Length: 310
Ligand SMILES: CC(C)(COP(=O)(O)OP(=O)(O)OC[C@H]1O[C@@H](n2cnc3c(N)ncnc32)[C@H](O)[C@@H]1OP(=O)(O)O)[C@@H](O)C(=O)NCCC(=O)NCCS
Image (tube, rainbow, N blue to C red; front, side, top):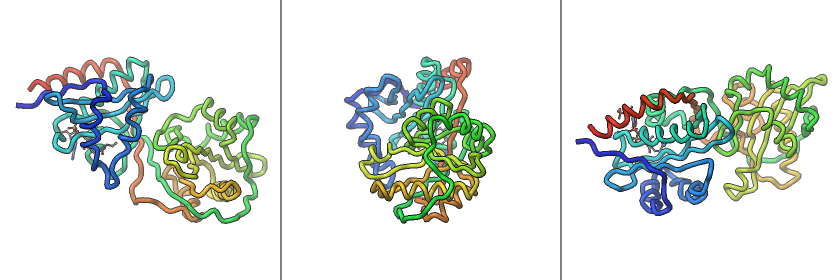
């Protein structure tokens, strides 16, 4: 007889059981204990817990990033309870939460070698929309850029026009990342990067030939002196020039490390390679998305409750 899976909102008292089954999620452990209390208190997000016989056996976190768009992360099932439909049941509850918040698009990221997650997600209707790589550079040697500068608020229109025509923007599914969270890159986001002086542009014969958005969220989250690229676009020549500019600025302000997050697009990744960035792994990061519809959730609930009761 199959065991009944109950999915509910997480409580702080779940932490011992959850942290225990997260202990060996990855070789290095898991980040769930570090973010648990923060996530429990969110108004626009929720941790769901699945229990079997009142014992927590799985979790997942869902968060509304902006109107109409949510992010799923930290799907974890206790290794003793895998392949019983736990992650599937929790994810469907996340869909329900998202729909209640008027979300129509949910996204998440997973490594390209995570077969279990990718299969479960495919069954849930997620589609691969983009592939990213993460590279790291710790050498901030002095190198002169020629055509790059900090973008100004007044450059917004020109940059937006560049993005609108960009193959790379389409290839990223129109998204940018901060830490490991991808969101759609819209005019409002671009404005914020510009206002915070976190946008770099390369200009060739007076036209934008490259754009790089950066952030220091990783620095705060991982307590280190680093920056990350959130979005990178342009010809190889433009990207090379923008990396030189960024390295020089990092050297001036004592920043020790750059995490290069970028769409897996050859002219861009090869520029990072040339500039001494190294890949942490051979795998890439798959960005998946699913468009939600109320009907589909009704239907999936029938399937899910049948699975629980059989
Ligand atoms: C990925 C993970 C959350 C899946 O949890 P789960 O509760 O076992 O998933 P489900 O039982 O809902 O699986 C649904 C379907 O996914 C597929 N699947 C799940 N695990 C699989 C595996 N190890 N190998 C192949 N297919 C798998 C199957 O098609 C399964 O349906 P089936 O059992 O009827 O064939 C779990 O393996 C886990 O915690 N992994 C470590 C953390 C992780 O990788 N999280 C995802 C990060 S994005």
